Structure formats: structure tokens, C-alpha cells
Length: 345
Image (tube, rainbow, N blue to C red; front, side, top):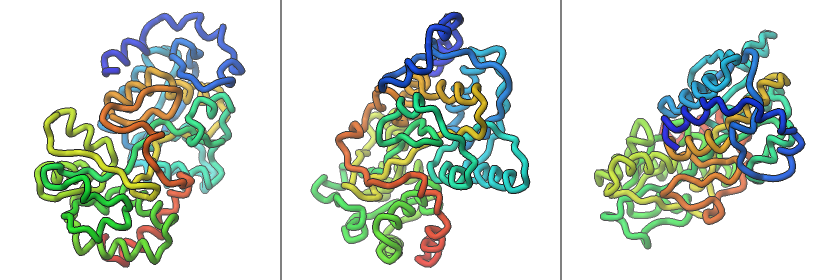
């Protein structure tokens, strides 16, 4: 769904009368995609703490929701996801409550806030809309992103690709990475949880001997496409975005098997209040219109209903992500210590 279509769809006046016929219990019985036209009008005032918004695409969603609900006053505080999580923790410690909702682009930040006891439980009809492996009682994943190995097929044959992320530094491939990037650090946290600290620091030290460092993961995939490196480490959508503007780019995605190299992380939202409007607001983010928009424009993976993933990646049931409690990705401090010991930060 394109930007204009999202705005038109969420702004249509056909909402009137739609929600009185919808009971919450009706939503709870099955996994399906819901339209904004099935949802209640939002009324009143909410304050949302919004993490980094994928180049303004999250802002488009919020503007469309506000336009559809003229009696709804949404106040937004923007900032880096990690900084906002720390702000929420500091405010709670000071006995201050300014936010009703927290929309974060990383599960680790969600975990920080949830583990502090600030997240309210969600109704079961909301969790039932999510794919079974992404159901949590006190936060709602919105969209997913997969760790991948983007590679240049003009330089690397598929038989040269490792199937285990732990084997990557043992190959003869040149590598691009962005160790200061938050997504990379969540990936290393997952590796630490799965493989242990000793194996993780050994991997980091070995990688440091081979990998060329870039500031961000878009830089990683651009470097691979230019041939500066054979292979990189990056979330899937950077490759899809690059290829959307350059379809013949020398770039292909590979996936490892059942390890941190294939981690599925998620953006998500927490309600910090039991306010009904806050809960209904979360329902909007799970609708077909919003999920399809974020899939087509941000190339993120819809996690609610049966909405299709973006083109260019396999479906979730055909890859082998590791079994990691996403909220445990919040424990990033030991990860940063390891990375400093390894000399990569």
C-alpha cells in the first residue's frame, strides 16, 4: 500500500457506524486481518513516545490515524528508541508518568521498559491477532526484521556461503559490518544468549581481523553491492530498499540456520496505561491498512493477521530463526562489555 493510499484509506469517512457492530469478543476468536473500518473511533488525548520512525513512515501512519479520528489528540515525543526507554525508566523512578504509549523499533528497548513493570497487560483479542510466535501478554510486536547475510553474487557463489554465523570468520570472504549499530548489538546479544560469552568474544575477535567497519547497515549493503566486500551483516530491509531503487543491483540475501545470524527482531508497542483509547490505538497499528503500508513502504514484515511479507524475502515458515525471548535482548550492557573487550567498539 502506497503512502497516498494509506492516507486515503484511513481518512475515509466510512468509519461511522462500523464499530458499534463490532464486539471485542468477536475479535478474539481467530487470527485474521482487521480493517480500520472495523475499529472504534479514537477520542480523547494520548501521549506517545515514538522511537526512530523509519524515515518518517511511522509518522505517516500516525498522521493518517489522527486525520481519521478528528476528536483524538495525539501528542508525540520523538527520539532514539534507547534514549526514550531510559527516559521512561527515569520518569518512573521519579514518580512521573507522562507517556501513555511507547512505540519502539527494537525489542530490547521494549524489554527494558517491560521488565521494569511499566507495561500493562493487553487484552487477549489483541495478542490473538499476532502470529503465535510473536504473542506477549504486555506488548504487541508491530513488524519484524530478519538478520541476513547480503552478498554480491558476482563475487561469491552460493556454495561459498556459510550456513552458520559462527563459521563466517573462518571463510575466505571479505566482510562488511557495522558494530556500532543498534541492530548489530541486538544480534550480538542474541549470540551471547545462544552461544555463551566465550564463543561470542572469540567470534568478535576473529571477525575484527577480517571485517571492514561501516557506520550503518545501509552502508554495509551498499559496500557489498559495489564490490568492496563479498558479504555483509544487515537487517533484510536495507537490501530490499536498495534493490527497490536499483533492481539490477549486485546484491542477494542469504540466511543462516537456527542461530543469531537469522534472528527475527521486532518493533513493538507498549501501553503504559489501562486507558481504553490507548488499547484501541494499538488495534489500529495491527490493521491490514497499517501492516500492508509498513510492508510495502518500509519493507518490514507484518506480524499481525495474514498480511503478505514484502517481496524479495522468503516467508517466515521457510527460514530457521533461533528461539530467543525477544525481551531478553534488553540486556545489552554485557554485550557492549564483550564488544569493547574484543576491540570492536
